[in-house]
Image (tube, rainbow, N blue to C red; front, side, top):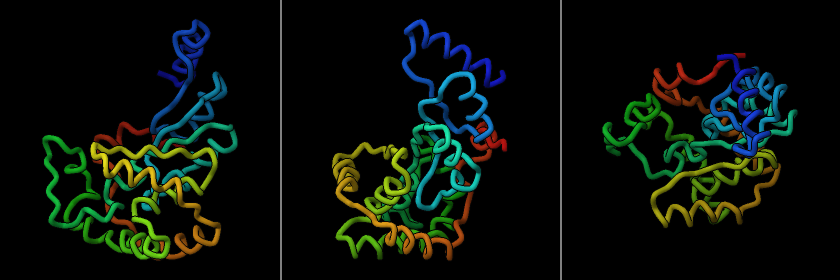
Length: 203
């Protein structure tokens, strides 16, 4: 179904008072623009983190900024990887944990991507923070319209995540982190093949 038809249907529902806002998930910049032309998009959700930079390269972040759309990164701590609490010995249950089927969470790629975690850990030590807090603070410092949604079932992790609000990374901090990050090659795809086929990856 053309996105214009979807946006038009949501527009009607908003007019009827049955829906408050119109949001998109895993949409390409082209789809965002087409939808927004029919009815204003309030928010776009897609994966974005210190180690997953696709929205910077594919035009999605630029489109959101240009059109005044909120951007909601899911997986802002790398689906748990950037906490520093996952290593090659971590067992992910394929029956209950989607990450078990993600290439990035294979033992080989967990090991290969440790330089990203090590970078965050080193930097966190200079700020009396944790790697997860730096990863979240990094996102919040990028643009004012970015609101990350870290998920957790654990109260301690929730409190840790909230602690990122107390960190104010400076432009110099961001430059330092990015300069080191861009020396590292991230290994493995962000989702499994079936999920990536479902994501809108158009231009």
